[in-house]
Image 1 (tube, rainbow, N blue to C red):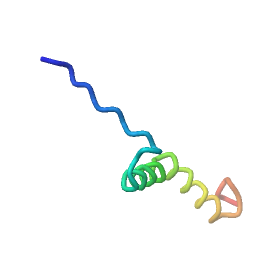
Image 2 (cartoon, helix red, strand yellow):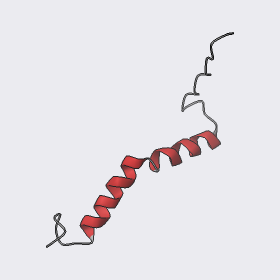
Image 3 (spheres, rainbow, N blue to C red):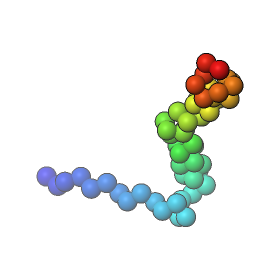
Image 4 (spheres, rainbow, N blue to C red):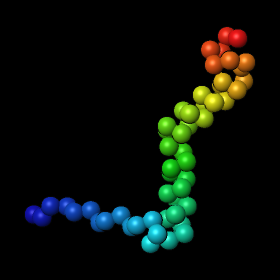
Length: 53
């Protein structure tokens, strides 16, 4: 029984256009980016960062 060895991920420069789009969508929709976007929308909808002003 041999150990599973995953294939190397392709370098971004060598990736096909479809793989580039998939990677871009994945990076944009990462949880950290969504949290920052929600914080900015929330701060923008009030007059101050505390939300009570």
